Length: 165
Image 1 (cartoon, helix red, strand yellow):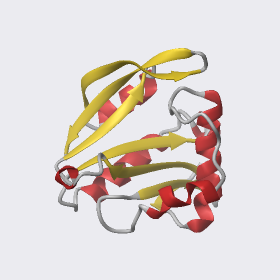
Image 2 (cartoon, rainbow, N blue to C red; image 1 turned 90 degrees about the vertical axis):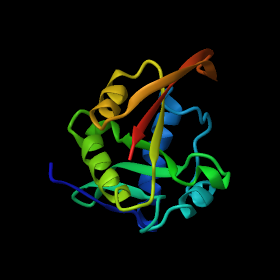
Image 3 (cartoon, rainbow, N blue to C red; image 1 turned 180 degrees about the vertical axis):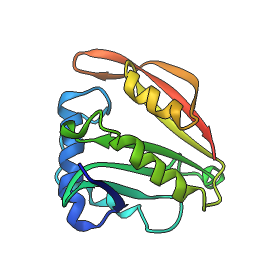
Image 4 (cartoon, rainbow, N blue to C red; image 1 turned 135 degrees about the vertical axis):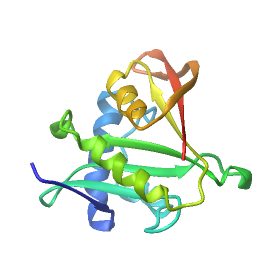
């Protein structure tokens, strides 16, 4: 597997939506509960740029998109502008091959060029692999929101993580 990481463009949208929809349907990693069409995700895609704090990167194995990561606004109020939320999703077929690590390495290298102060991540528990990945990039757990999400007929806790940029 020869994985490359680069910026996303509209040709990648269907693959990204497909990866994310898999997690919507099969996992507690996201609290979205209804799969998206590409058109329904258009506003989400429009928040990203090639420069600036809001990035969307894809991992490719040859031409196939096998994962993505992004940084988004933590909150909409202006005083939060030096903080971002980061997330990473990898296609099931590419799990446990270092894809998430490659994506995050590229994302945080790009974010180091921005005027940012902190990155945050929210991880639904349990998720040992995601916790391990985030901790390897310097994230520290700062709290837990107990039973904050309801999916698959049960409540889930979410651990909050923070990284100094």
